[in-house]
Length: 197
Image 1 (cartoon, helix red, strand yellow):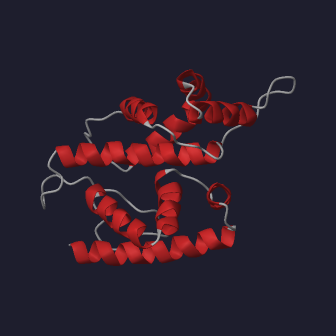
Image 2: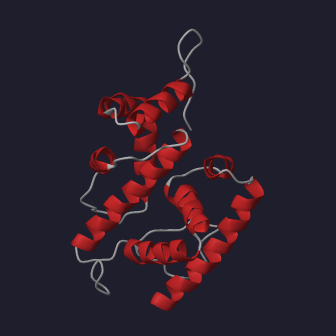
């Protein structure tokens, strides 16, 4: 996801990795330098997540990115392995922003304006209603308690828009493992969401 800079300059990926290390070591100014480098990726993740929101949603892409940025700034002692790990954490924080917003607007109540999300074609079952964001978040939290990696795969693929290869690299597993986790996690989540109805 992170592109390279032209030759003669420090490659963008290396610069991002260096800034992540500096930020993890306590250099708060590193985050301010980092965000402009990954701004387009952060906005892309936020746009993907916002497309799943209902019409008339009160949050805008910029607000989701800014709130995630503020939450990232509050993270202390976090060590990011690489830019992919950082973007995965950013996607998770954006999901938290949207879920917190949905919860604060009363989406927890059955029929209370719950936010609808669509799980991509491979994840959805035809003629079934799509889960609301809060129910999906609850199911993901339950999955994380059982199998953290499968939950991370869903976060990265569904919420972060990561490819199989990017997810595999960020989690230090094979693409085949990601696909297996993805299939099993989807089946488990669909079962949980059906029981939640």
